[in-house]
Image (cartoon, one colour):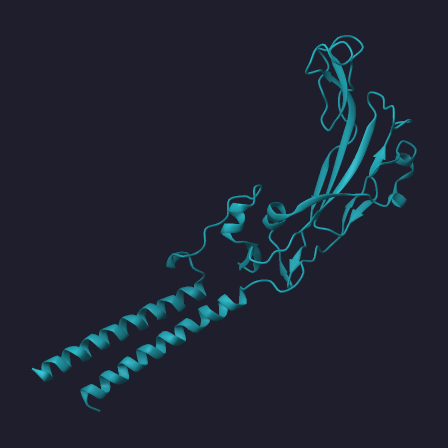
Length: 257
């Protein structure tokens, strides 16, 4: 084989190596494409205190107590005070006599998150739920309400209340409502990383309550091991092809001279 034929063979080999090196990366990009199914919440979430459950991706219990607070306008309300529903205890230690609130809420506000959510059979990162999930009020089925709570609470609106007369609540009365977390359309917002669906950086930046997104792996040292080899072979193949082309052109110029 003469030198010209050898150069052409070397150049063809380099191009083939480059093409083969790009195949694994392309295949991985295809595997990490857009989701094609519907997200599945997995195991039901349950508020065991009240027997409330949801099949969605999150469950939120909101407890409010009827309490005194200082009125924004001292001339309004009852002697400068007004009564409101509030989800946190209001300190009344400095209030005027007759405006005393209970020291604390007898029930806690609680929130549960799905830990087994999947999409196309692969896990959904918890960041996706917290960043993209939308809370919506729902009225549970209270058929599992424990007897001790059934003696205190009665259905009121979308939840439960402890007031004997819901139209005239008293200081210290409670009301409890629930919300469930639903996911919107996820197209264009997720990518597969480390075997789980995670937020794309741009989707994380757009979500107001999203945690800072991990940067995309664009530096060779940050790439997964299998993709490091793909890029290494690709770079090497291009370099060999360029060197072969330069050598071949130089040889032709010398022969023409």
